[in-house]
Amino acid sequence: MAQVDLIMPKMGESIMEATILRWAKNVGDKVEVDETILEIATDKVDSEVPSPVAGVISEILFQENDVVPVGKAIAVIATEGEVPSPKPSPAVKDEQESTATSNGHSSGDGQTPSPKPEPVSIGQESDPIPSTSNSGRFYSPLVKNIAKTENISLTELERIPGSGMQGRVTKKDILAYVENRTSAPAAQPQQPATSQPSTISKPAVSVSGNVEIVEMDRMRKLIADHMVMSKRVSPHVTSYVEVDVTDMVNWREKNKAAFQKKYGEKITFTPFFIEAITKAIGDFPMVNVSVDENKIIVKKDVNIGMATALPSGNLIVPVIKNANFLNLAGLTKAVNDLANRARQNKLKPEEIQDGTFTLTNVGTFGNVMGTPIINQPQVAIMAAGAIRKKPAVVETEYGDLIAVRQMMFLSLSYDHRVVDGALGGSFLRRVGDYLEAFDANREV
Image 1: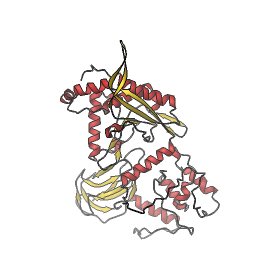
Image 2: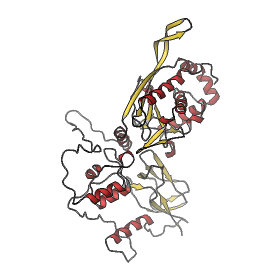
Image 3: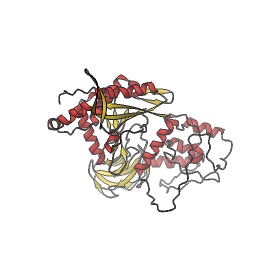
Image 4: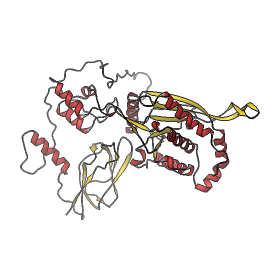
């Protein structure tokens, strides 16, 4: 009789844990191969976990809303249709044995003791430490483990200078802090420390009067943390250009029916913007980078994220991989497919990862321009404003004329650590140039 551990899957390079949203199966339920057992969520996407084998659920090791590291057993499936006596997963057993050894005890009866909270060695109990704090700072499981062992509270941990990427506290940072710590942590002052940028003073919020208190959902909390972290990590600068897109607009209006008939896809303006962005990145590759401490990582792939509003009011950024190798029809198909599945919550984890540059189309909401926040760890994001008819000066062989043209604003927010005004401004102007030079006689 075989037992198979159901493992928390790895959902991407930077994903180290996931939250269990819902168990679709209970202990004793039969499952088939690839049948959904539970739903999980990371800071990027919700996903279903299928069964790797056919059998019966013999044990569920974690409950709903538990946060579980990737690679850890979350359930046990008994094959051949019988449920054996439950036994702990290796991961749980190892953790218990490690705890017993560290306390100078071991269990000799082979039974798994019920987990008990460990007493705090100092009179003051540590705050629970989340993976991402309210300030947007990320803490790895290893750092959280050390903090727990050394009775370092979240408030105290927030004050430790981090040498890792985006100011993260590394193992080296926290061990150095512990080594220099001569006594138990002193009582925390009421005022936030001004010397450490990671501590953010929050304004008092009045709840008097006619108000309604709405709890943020999980996704909104993650978006909020991500936005605060981005503004803290990257010094944002925004540049603007105004672009004449008359030829592009006229071509789309003239050919949209033929385009849909030929390719089976409705064409919006987004594929035109992405096409121009990929060309401009080819001219200015240093916009397609990330920053790791004092190193600049130049991305050879051009993966364009497109900010997509969801029916819930939240936001998600699906990514078009290798967009520079797609023609207008390929971009249109990718844009429509990702946008539709994003709104239906059917995106795969890999479809929102590895973006190198992001586009947000604020013109969809009637806005003429915007100052978007950089989607970390990227260094630039472009906003496309609404296209409007405006009087403009047109140069002709007979001289300058005033004509009604289709005009729009483009804005680019960029990380001033590595993208200065010359690079950011030149890149944005180049995107505008490609849009203005659109071939009005282009074949469908």
